[in-house]
Length: 124
Image 1 (cartoon, rainbow, N blue to C red):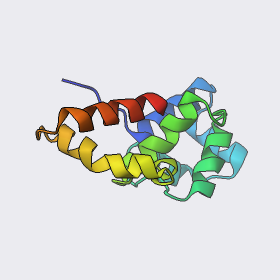
Image 2 (cartoon, one colour):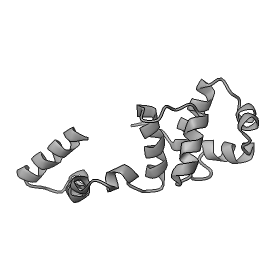
Image 3 (spheres, rainbow, N blue to C red):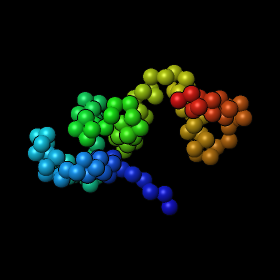
Image 4 (spheres, rainbow, N blue to C red):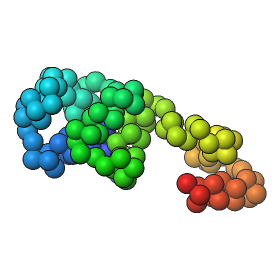
């Protein structure tokens, strides 16, 4: 059985890695501890606005452009059932999404389309 990391769990792990308690973290940055606690426990959804996600990432000392940066934003989008914004700007990616979705559902696609999808993924 695969373990699925949630946005809240990732947020909490980053906070703990900074050696900050929930209350200490919130007091330092003027955040509501009740809301951050609910966020970390998955009782409220992650924010979807880039400004708020940017702010949280900065407070958690997640370096912009790092793997953790993308994971942070991707987890927030995934929990909302959204495709990450930067992927929506690439027309080649958008054109290939139906192929990817069919493949993930186990539907048969042509060898040529599959090769095109593999090449697109390699570029990303």
